[in-house]
Length: 588
Image (cartoon, rainbow, N blue to C red):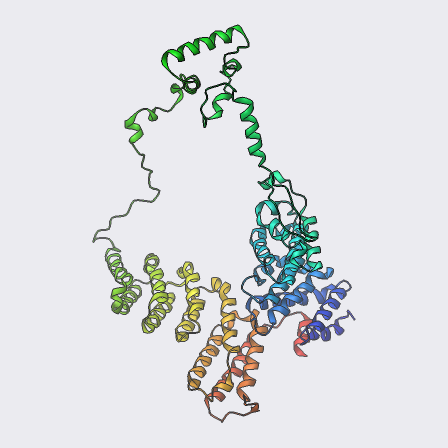
């Protein structure tokens, strides 16, 4: 079964609709890889990469991310496939959906995280601070299944990474959250309570002194899980009171609230705290002299002690405490910034700098929004004239333009600003790299608005200007494209008045996919099925349970042809792998 000519059918079954069948075939291929690893492991590595990409870009409605997560769990559990997972630990952690997802997907993701800890061991340490808060958040959930999976994941992480005892100190709420599940009055299932005990056993015993609190509060309750405990005083308070009773004389005139640290000085003999009863004749003379001096001056014991403690200590104090002139002066720190360069009309950048600064003052003023369009025309005229010499002005212009795009309420102005940014990218090229995060934040925010045409043009210009840095934002674009394609409901077009706008929007997305086809090679397995499903719905849409073919020459037929053309272009961009097994699979 592990021979080369028998493997293609097994890999074809990995595309089966039933998740259980795919999982069984994956386990079988893992066992066969021990016998013939050369033709099997490269293809399985490609399968794992496709699953990670599906986790990043897949949608939540069709359950594709949940299925991908479960198949990754199979990779983690099959011992023969674990060596394929280790190079992708970072990618899997970044792709796992742990925030704002459905409960089922969250439980599966936590389970995958626990299995990953069993494989990665100490390699998971750099992400502990990032992952543990998500686990603690799910422990607080009311769903017992999520609680059980979260506790199991925490135990596996602690066991695999050696992160024991420290979680109690790094997250003080952990002990309280887990212990709240144990009382039978909470009516928690036994398997959940058993998971709490198991997790406590893995995390290890905790020294109460290291927890930072030794105060025991009364826990009131009843039934089997309740109990009553004596409320004890804090150990620090007990030790302080004992020290106070041991040092303070019983017949002294020390006032209440005096700092007791004065009585620990080694320069004072025990005879001075004995109320006049000296331990030696030398100390008695000293005490009698102090008593006579206090009786003559009217000083109490506190003042005498303070004088003895700090006598002749002024010589060691800084001079500025006693010199008003130095004490009142405040040192001004030296600036680390270079001094501002003074421009003169003879400088080459004088007039562009003055002009750009004046234009930016207008752009920042919201009351002059009617002039913002003219400002951008002037800025683009300056950039076209300067060419690459305009790069120093980017930090003054691009952030303000993007902020205006987000905050302005005029759709026409926003459209014009997006077009200007697209034109700007073709002038400055790779110098636009520092502003890519802000640009794609704008793309994600306004993708489903009426500015799709300007956004597609902007993305294509950025892809041509900064190709290397653009690739890290491709998953974001794929998510937006899939959401737009999968959200099309052709059956509602006949009964709505916005059918033409929907058709126009879909055509824009298809043209955009063709424009960035060179960076979509890793995401073909996600985009092509969505486009084929869209084609089927366009060719034979279902209306009131009846399939009705669209009229020839209509807008729907034109979009269907455009969709098939897009699929053809994407298939042509796939580079054929030199692996004969992959060629056989594609030929079948």
